[in-house]
Length: 286
Image (cartoon, rainbow, N blue to C red; front, side, top):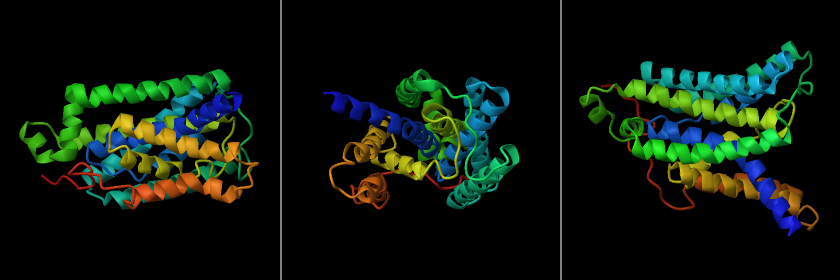
């Protein structure tokens, strides 16, 4: 029983940043923006949270700064995709590369050392568990908002038929930019969770492809908040399994690869056909 409880707890710990990032991906894609930049938004959120916590001594301010940094990255993606009609995959990849290189450079500027930051004030175990609860509340709230509110109707319309939305005198570009800001904020929160919730520092590569796993969770979850949350929990369980089975004789490399193999299966369509929003990734030029 103790082992089962430990496994379930660890699964939720590993799933929480994926849930935040996947919810960010759901918001963006339901609005018609393909958010490849989730990895970069996680990275920037994690780094900014650590820097602000280091400078101010307040992990709460660090958490808020991580959310704001993710939102800024989301705005950058949305602005590039809607105002300049930049290819969304190219824009997202650029943000990922900029985040990776910028944060690596920032480590040497702020902490005077490459690779990893100094330890900073973190949220602690209670803060970590509180953020796990927030992840589930965010999933439930987003489910209601997308399906029961005017904002949700407009967001879904921007991803399915932006021209119909424009005919109702609503600017699809504005709806999409607001969605990318919210999506970036959620991903930034996931990054802050990693650095000052689960840990107390930032290190290069700490996101370890979680943004792409979250993107796979969006597909597994059929572009719905609750489905993406369930898929994220599944990925979290696969990540936790490597710690539970580390003495089983199974090669550790295989266990570490399981979440990525599952993500690859989702991204290549092996897990079954799923229909994305009709205008997902398609610029609005009306």
